[in-house]
Length: 132
Image 1 (cartoon, rainbow, N blue to C red):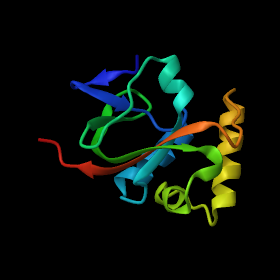
Image 2: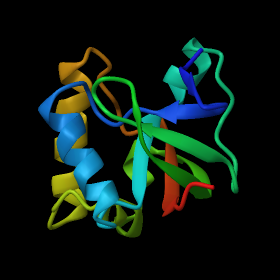
Image 3: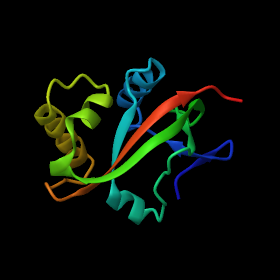
């Protein structure tokens, strides 16, 4: 199971450290409105997919909630078929879909989960919401 914070499922972007700080900064600045995960991780963790309207706690490196995000779209897509619109919405500065694929492929390989063109991904779109 993934962590729960303040009654919400948590979203931990990237890996702990500098990468997570950079990605969280992009979310808080409004530049990052999408993220991508491996469907296999959901299955391994017996975690259900996010759903439109679900609110998640965006976590800092220390596990505290930085913000609340609301899911606006969920798509299952093979790695080979991720559209540029999704990659661009990740807000990480990639100048092309090929650059996005190369970077994400390197990231997943580095953490021990290499991808193939057929690897199923979970593409999430979201917006930051004010806490109530």
